[in-house]
Amino acid sequence: MDAKPRLLEQVRCKLCAKHYSYRTELQYVAWIRRFILHHGKRHPQEMSGPEVEQFLTHLAVDRRVAASTQNQALAAVLFLYRQVLEIDLPWLANVVRARRPSESQPHADDRGTRDAASRIHKRTYAKPGYVERPRPVQSHR
Image (cartoon, rainbow, N blue to C red):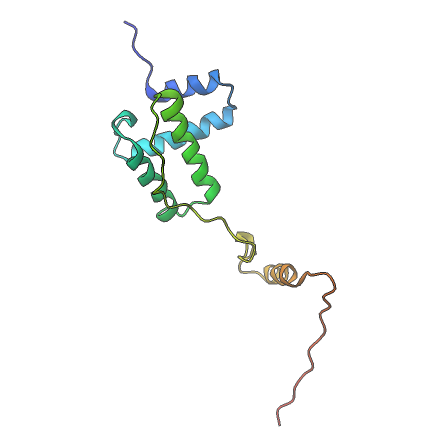
C-alpha cells in the first residue's frame, strides 16, 4: 500500500526540494502546526482565508507577537497553501497587524535599571551640538 505522506511531512519534503534552510523548515513546520492546533486540528484544506486571518489576528492581539514574528507565521501558512496544498487564498485584508516598535519606545532590555535610564537619556539627548549643563540649585525662601 502506498500511503500518501502526512501533511507536515509533505511540507518538509517541499521545503527541502525548494532548498529552504533547515532552520526555516523547523520554523515553518512549527507555525503550520500551531495554525492547525489553533483551529482544533482541522485540516487546512477545510479552511481558507477567514481562518488564516483569524489566526494572524490572534497572534497580534492575544499573543502580542512582534510584527516580524507575525510575518514569519504568515509566510509559513502561505507556503502551506500555495506550495503544498496548491490552493490560492483570497487577499488577507482583515488581518490586524502587529505593530513594529518605534524608536521612542524603550527597548526590552532598557527597563528597570539605573544603567537603562542612562541609556534612554543618551538616546534621547544624543544630538549633535547638544551640551548638557548642570541646573542651578534653587533655594526656597
